[in-house]
Image 1 (cartoon, rainbow, N blue to C red):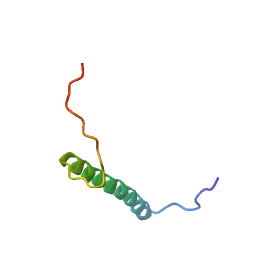
Image 2 (cartoon, rainbow, N blue to C red):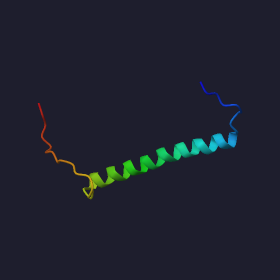
Image 3 (cartoon, rainbow, N blue to C red):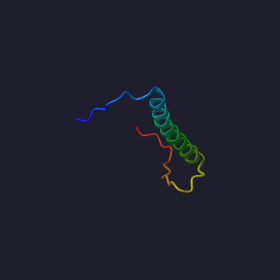
Image 4 (cartoon, helix red, strand yellow):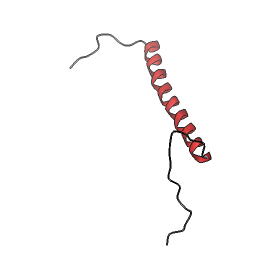
Length: 57
């Protein structure tokens, strides 16, 4: 099994961690934007079948 020879510097570790966090941040922004457009009915690229508000018993 491959093992790194030297310890990774704190700055390099922080850079990688921030890149990883940024990916999640942008995914959340896109998901929230899609949810807003679906809730207002302004979505042009995503189709949702509308259901009636009937109470099932």
